[in-house]
Amino acid sequence: RSSAGQLNPNLFPGKLSELFSMSLGQIRIGSHERIESVTYNSKTIDAVDIMAQRNLTAVPVVNEEGVLVDTCSRMDLVRLASDFQELDLDRPLQQSLAHHQQLTRKIHTCTLSDSLGNIFERFEATGKHRLYCVNDHGVLQGVISLCDVLRFFLI
Image (cartoon, rainbow, N blue to C red; front, side, top):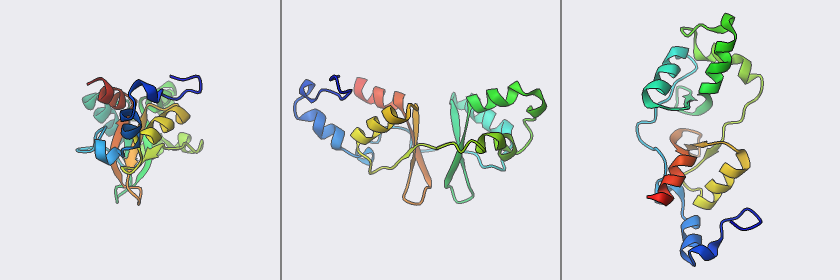
């Protein structure tokens, strides 16, 4: 890395800049098939089950049209469990996440047309470990994690 926090393009002359200008759709990093999601009407236990079965740290929340509207993370569930009065896993997810919605959480997204360079910048700027891939209408199309990007370069 250079002192400005950028990857050094001299490590792979020509090839790195070509690679970083390629779109996510061209290189297909991340998961883009059989994406598990829940709705606000799903029971909270459904989100817990998906995360446990698929070893996920979060599950996207979509509306009836598949538009990404929120996310439910393990940390959300830990916060929920810390308040024993709120520990009702049969309640709709919207009720369980209601206290977090007041915080106006930002869901970090990308599109298949974003370049790999933009994906790196977004990970660095947000400090998050996952981005949800959506189309122009906000419909969930995939999930890309920092681990997915690292795997791409290591394999």
